[in-house]
Length: 453
Image 1 (cartoon, rainbow, N blue to C red):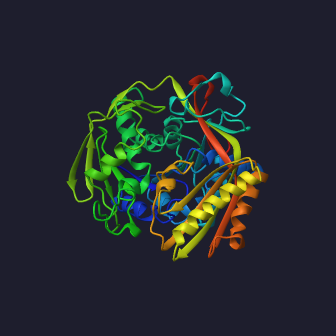
Image 2: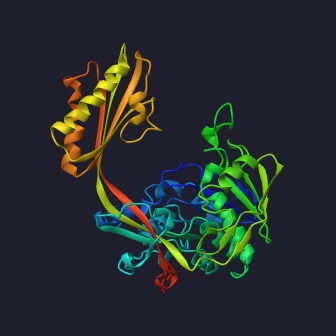
Image 3: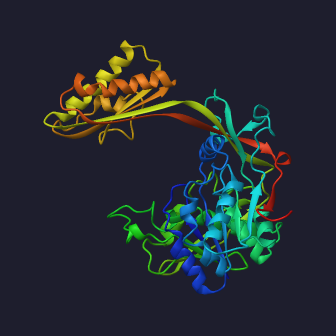
């Protein structure tokens, strides 16, 4: 059996979640791995922007908080750490990890960096096909910030087989973070597509962290989850034949049952019969999910088909600017005052001929389901007395957006009565569009940081 756990499911996840996972794996005394999935669609573009400002930045901002509590335990208990927390600057992340190790009296920790996902200057995006899920999006107009291919598990496995104790990657397919350690441990054949599918399925269930152990599942009164403030992140106990049990550390909150596993199983699956990854096409249609104990669910039946001929690549562009401003109205007739505030801002934008797209929501009324034009809000009849928060959003060039936000601030004295608690923010936006690129353009490799080649 090989135990592999999740330490994070996104950039900004809980910084103490990995500790009970590592302690549980260490207590079993058989080694294992823990993965950190911290990259979203826009994370790499933001990382590139940070790197341009500071060559030592551009990796996961919470890296120095994620790793110090677990690094020593992992090194001493043969638990490999694998994370895409390298983001846009894997080598800087590796340097940071070596500094943490040195500070903890752990000389000689072997940190490998996987590279090859960064395709800036290596691919003509206009000559590639746009990924079908993004074909409806308008063509970006800003400059390209980042182009990153989703690469597979092979370089991760090779790095571990070469002795890596920590593997730092940039953009890899999320399930590859788990498939790599599994291939390295069991010496699976890359051509055994059912085993590749099984490892990919384990990674798919682990990669979102507490989403599979009750986090995003929780809905009080319908789907109750115990002690969510201390939710335990998942651990997969994987056998050599690819079957595995999903569980979590004893004493942690949350729950792992057939319901939580099925929800995560179908998360982000474009086609259950053909979930495309760089390593394999995963077929979920015969997967069986069976509870075998408290917080223990056995998963079997993954089937694999040939990997796709192309790789998905996310392209990040500079977009326009986003302005947000909020103001509250409370007490008698508060809803009508909130509605009037929306009308005033729309009239002011028109009067000043501000070239912005805009949206206004009275939070708690129709703010989730309405369109940008406020079709549902126009017909909504709320309780006049109450407590309402109005949120305005503006998109466009910086000067126009800043002017629109300033108009919301002016409501303090320009009415309606009793407005307060204005919050405002203006920031640049990043757009992403995914394309399909030939595998021949993507050359991946691993290397050890701080060691002679």
